[in-house]
Length: 308
Image (cartoon, rainbow, N blue to C red; front, side, top):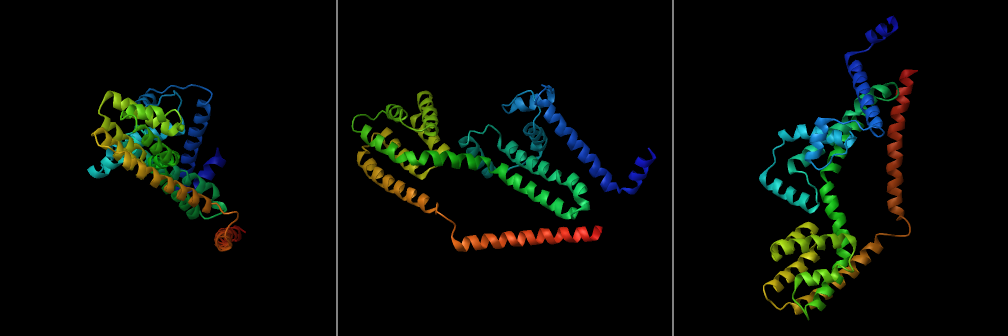
């Protein structure tokens, strides 16, 4: 006991707080590992998770962030225009969060990542400056915030990249079908038999929207979900078909343009995959690595010399 008491007297108040925080984080980590094997129900967490469509009965790191986010959400105030744009993005990405919760979740993720720098600063303070450790984790927190706040954009981008290569074939299918029918549902059902999984899902949602509501609204919703200029051109032609216009010549020209665009896209992809790195790029990369290693190594050597 005397040894513990003397050790505490030698520590500063900040060091004691850091140790307590480290113990708390360690306890949370052990608890998370335990919940992988034991189901530990928590009414408060379950209620929060179920409100957002998740309820596994286990407390994971994602659920901890969700719990923190629900506390931050009440303080989030978004501009009306920004909120409208963000809501459209969340709808397109099929994310069920409200815009306020989505923003608060990104903030919570950034704060959680940055907090881990406190105990690590104490642990490695004997080997490297605690300022560097804390700065690294603050950067990690900022990176985590931007990564989580960009999840909706990333989902939309990935979905668009999967669908765009099919649009030339889809436009060609529409072109051929218009010679015999103007039934948009029939055209979609015909193409869904040969399309990829991502586009098939969007077509299924669109067909369901058409059968339960307005055809034009269903097509506009498809355009908003995928966000592709090529698909927008196809949607405009289909909406004109719904209004009774003869769009066969329009789709003849569109098929030709999309075929050329697809060839250009494939050419750009091939140019982005060189057999080896350009010598100038490799030299820049080597210089950057050398500078980074020098700075970190120099700081470590200084810290070691101070200890000796």
